Amino acid sequence: MALLSLASAARHDVQQQRESEQAQVVPRPISRALQKAQRNAEAKLVAFEQAESAANAAKAEQEETASRKMSKMEEMKAKTTASQTQVATSRQAMADAEKAASQHMAHSGEFEAALAEWNALSKAVEGMEMNVTMKEEAMAATLAQMKKHLEALKDALDGKKRDRDAAEQNMMEKTNVVLSANKLKADAAADAATAEQAAQQLQKELRQSQAEFDKAVSNATKAEAKSKEAANVAREAKNKHEDGQRTVELIKKLRKAVDVFYSSVDDFVESEHSGGIESDPKLTTAFEMYNLMATTFLEVQKFSPDLFEEVKSAVDEIERNSVAAIAERCDPTGRLMDDNDEPKPEFEAECGSGLWGKVNMTRLEIPV
Image (cartoon, rainbow, N blue to C red; front, top):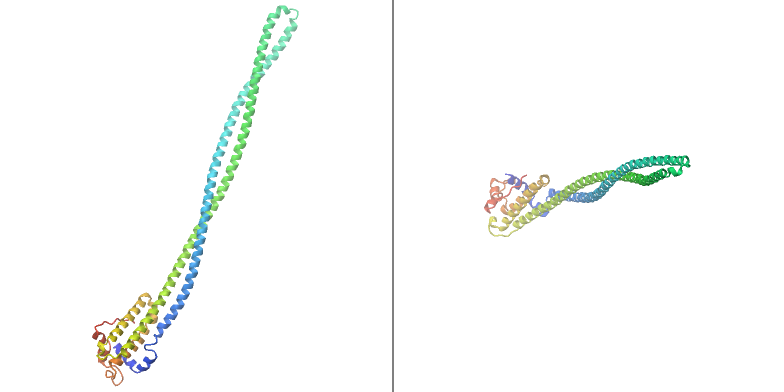
């Protein structure tokens, strides 16, 4: 019944339609959809190019911050190693200072003992010298009698002097040792203080390097996230751009399919085939082109239901034009039309869907 209604409406102006737009002009919804799709595709291309540029810039920034992060990490590792070495040096210097102090204490004790011994012997020598002097004065008159005893005292004095000199030499040696130990202690303490200061400075630099490294890691992480986000935006823009291009190509394909179908219907109408129309190969070709066009409409519907909603209104126009054109050859005298120029019931079987069965073909339906 739908085809009958279409045929009835078309019979009033079929000649005018064929001359003006039937096979020569693509239905307006398709042309408008193509214009809109081309504008959208151009806008999406610009968006894609901008997003891709932003993604490349973000990626470059990410690579730069990652490089700075690695540089700070290497710097921190170097300072960590230097700090560990300096701390070990400081510890060794402190140990050396402790050892020097210990040696100083040991040598100081020996020096005190030697000094005490020398003092005792010196006092003994002084006492004995005084005693000898007294004896010499007291026994001057009896020198001969006391000579033997005096010689013994002198021998004893010489022995004590030797002991005293030996004690003095020992004391001087101990003095030198103590002085050396004092210098060693002072040098070791100075070295330890210097090493400690160096270690503290390296610890300070290490903390600074750690802070810089942490900041570099943070910056690298942020840059990486920014780069990923920009890449996602660029990818989405690219997909939209590709969808826009696909939309344009699909509408062009649909327009071409309509043009080809119109041309095939014109070829059939103008055919000089002498047999029945169902045996005219140009009718089969026209039906094949119709199914190809229907397939393209279905492809549009599958790819973009919204786009299909824009172009589906052209289907009625296409059906009306093609049915009216085919009726020129199928019913040239209008015998299948009633007095009101409405299709009779048998029109559908002879000039409508019935023609598909006569050529053993199945008509694809375009959902509208």
